[in-house]
Image (tube, rainbow, N blue to C red; front, side, top):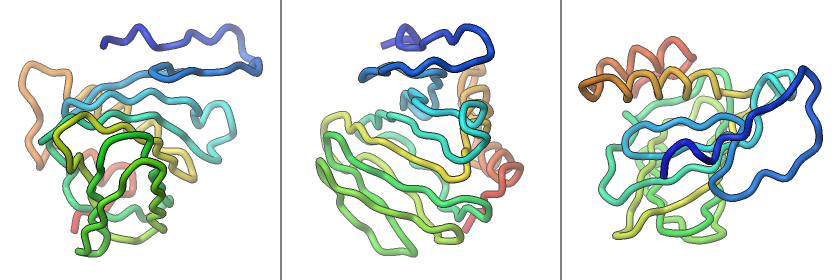
Length: 160
């Protein structure tokens, strides 16, 4: 699946619209994952961002980290997702929800044999970080974990 699911906004005013599965205002890829942003900072004054994200089986997880400037939440649509919170692993299946309050150490990844799909919300918005992550992962060589940690630090994420 390519970037065909991206919706082009017209003008400076946002019209109400329905954004379907596999579609987004902006679309990014990283770590074999696709991210379709349904809500962006530019649309809501930075209040929150919302993405539909795919996680490939056995894909690379984000380095464990904590957000100093936002909370994060996951709502699993399908598949099985492992969310490690302060060292404790939670296995989250369809329609399961996990809240990661600001300052809480975590990482996540696909825990199953099939692709997983989930909604991820950041409040305040974090879509600018994922634009940077997309750039890192779409170079000739995948970034090192140190490259990812440097980007994370720029966006208020502390490695743990």
